[in-house]
Amino acid sequence: MVDRVSDLLGKATELALREAGGAKPASGGEAPAFAAFLQRELENAVATLRQGEEMAQKGLLGTASVQEVVEAVSAAELALQRMTVIRDRVIAAYQEIMRMQI
Image (tube, rainbow, N blue to C red; front, side, top):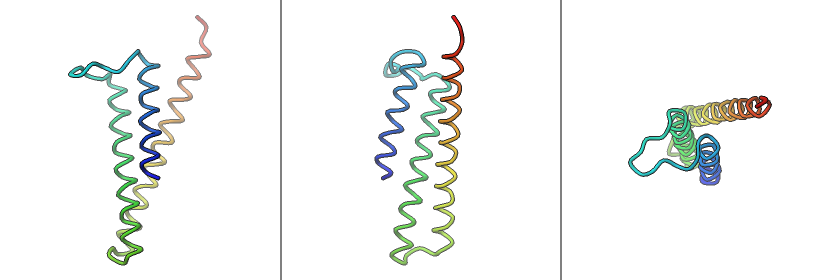
């Protein structure tokens, strides 16, 4: 499931970069600040989700304490909520730009 989310987030990032200013930056070039921020947040969210999923599996196997599982799952939930807020704000900004008259 996390891999599917990661793939979807990667595609969304590529689409956002393409819409924001053309193709991906050439190798060695730097991405715009917003694109770099978005990429970093996506990577952090996916890593946190993977850690939460891994800890939940360890909890089911009995190798992790309940507290560790709850902390990891709570962190994963928070990361998902953060990404949802970022997505919603990006969509709202895009819609606002599309409503502007030329």
